[in-house]
Image (cartoon, rainbow, N blue to C red; front, top):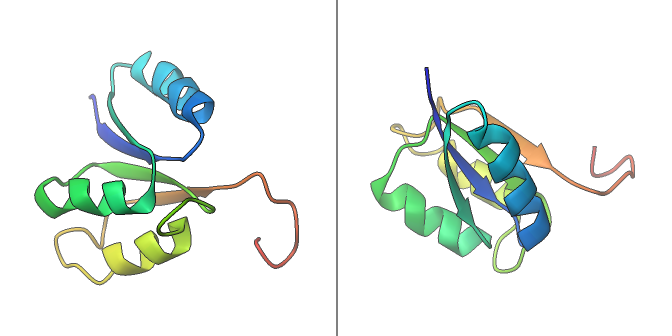
Length: 91
């Protein structure tokens, strides 16, 4: 069963890599370059899952996740936070 997955990451190479990998299984991938674009998309769409980079311009993945979980229509959508950081605080 194909899913719609929102990928928000400011690195074009990461967005492309995730799109290639996830679409190979037949999923519809929507990519956006930053947190503001993610919220703009979520205003009118309800994806099945979200992959959010932690560090992005305009709004980080933590803030997007926090806002999404306050919206009844979106609160049960699985969210994966992605990061290249390897410090204890980020984890």
